[in-house]
Each structure stands twice: as structure tokens, then as C-alpha cells.
Amino acid sequence: MVRTCAPENLEIPGMALAGHPGMTSKNKEEAMSDNDDVPFNRNFPLKPGIVEEVRPGVRRVLCNNPSPFTFTGTVSYIVGKGNVAIIDPGPDDAAHAAALLDAVRGETVTHIFVTHTHRDHSPNTARIKQATGAPVYAEGPHRASRPRFESEKHNPESGVDRDFAPDVSLAHGDVVEGDGWRLEAVATPGHTANHLAFAWPERKFNFVGDHVMGWSTSIVAPPDGSMIDYMDSLDRLAAREEDLYFSGHGPEIPEGQRFVRFLIRHRKAREASILHRLAKGETDIPTMVRAIYIGIDPRLTTAAGYSVLAHLEDLVARGVVATDGDPVIGGTYRMAV
Image (tube, rainbow, N blue to C red; front, side, top):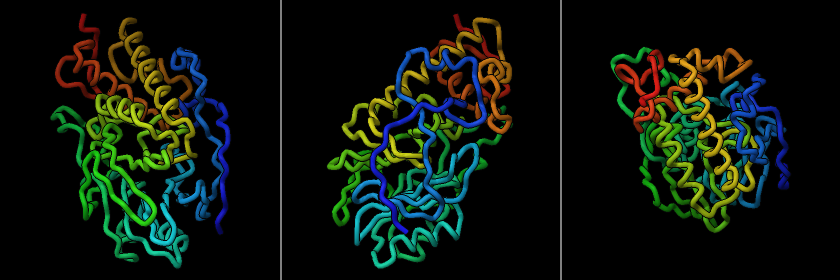
């Protein structure tokens, strides 16, 4: 079944961990202090296994893997007609692989692209490659944004795909052309070190993976991710001309550049919240999480802690915040001056 989707206006929903479900924050005004009118959008009625033509030449299929971190599930994209590319085949899920292959029945899959190597995006690549013989394009195997400190006891890399390896490694600016489409690799490290977006400049489309999502902010969890890299990548996207974003979870994002500018302001507001907590004498991440993320779904507490750690790691690198030893989840922090 194929359905078509016309552009819709974004609606303002309740924010939770800046968009995650299950959080009602009395600090919402702190996170949104710039009074920006760009909302998060949680209106995404697509059902798993249904093929939706979201724009001419772009179809999407939702995987049935909903969670507090994946929203309604991972979205895989089919680019082109006849000779097509698949972007992000999704998790290790035979039913989703079958849905993708059914969606391209009678067509030829010539390319497989992977934005990054989290387990909700890349493992199904093996099934699609085996069925189609198409080569796989990505930045490379999974790698952390920095080496793990000896003092780190947490394991944010439990959700990574260590078995993935592309046939063709792409660098920023590399272009891959197919039948009626042309995708440019845009390096967007931050959520993961090997994250790529795939821009279609002629259409002003950008397949942004998990770096930008309309339903929520992205999780940045050191050492897998890096807030320093994440912010630089947002600046890179904001400087480009593509303005319609297709994300790895949730609906498409019209006015993508404007939304990216909102995310930049939102992250800076979150940084200001952390500095405010430090100024009040709070020194550890759990205390800051309780103060900043009021009413958070308990399943998201760890992710919120990683987000605070990512900001603190950035602040320590810039000399704004000090810590004794390495910046880790169990560390203590204070203003440097």
C-alpha cells in the first residue's frame, strides 16, 4: 500500500526532554527563553509497514520499533523511482526488511546509504544487501567521539552496531549519483562520530538521520557522541541551502534551516541552565538532572544525564567549568572562575 503525503503545518506539542514524551517541565520557559515559535512536532500518524510517498521521488517506511528514544520507530527512506536507493534500512528486523523489499518490488536497489551506526539504523543493512546485491555507503564503521576515560564506568555504547562496515566510505562533500537523484555526503558528527547527512541539493532536501529530529532533540552521549561536534554540525547544516529535512524518526521538517537555528538556541539555553545550577552550588550531574528535567520519564533519566555530561564536557574544554579528573558522569563540577 502506498499513500501520499502533502506538506502540513507544524503544531506545538508539549515538550519533554525537549520533545521526549513523559516530561512536563516547569523549566520549559528556561529552555525556550528565546521565545522562538518553531515547535517540536509529534504528529506522525504513519503506521509500520506502510509505504508513504512523502514527496515525489521520496518514499518512507516506518519500522515497528517504538520506544522513548525512537519515538514511533525508525524511518527508512527510498529515493528515486525504478533504480532506487534505500537510506537507513533500520534495526535487525526481518519484518521491516520484508516491508522495504516489498515497497521496491519491480524496481532495482542500486545503493544503500547509512547515516550512522546505532542499532536502530544500520543492522538491517545486511538483509537488504543480501537480497539486492547493492553496495553500502556510509562514513565508516562505528567509532567513539573520543577514547573512553579509565574512570568511566557507564556504557553508552551498548546501542551501537559493531558489525557494520560499508563497501564505500564517504567523506564530507563526496557525491553519489543514481538514476534521477544525486546525494551529497554532509559530515554531521555529534550524535555519533560517524554520522552523515545526505543532501539532495537540486531538490533542497536533506536526509539528516538523528542529528536533527522534529519530534525531539537528539541524544548526545559521550564518549559515543560529542556536544562540541554536535554544535559545529548544526552550524554546518544551518549554512547550507537545503530546507526540507527528512529525519530518522518522526515527521519531515519544513523550514529546516530555521529549525536548526532553534536547536542551536535551545542547546545554548540548556547550557545556561547548567551554568545556573553550578552557580547555585550544585556540583553533580544527578542533582542537575533533577533540577532541570522536572517530571522526566524515569526511562529517560540516564539519557538526560548524558546530555548534561555532554554540555559539561564542552564547558570544561572551553575553560568555563572545572572538574577534578576527567569529565565523567560521576564527576563533580564547579565554575572555573
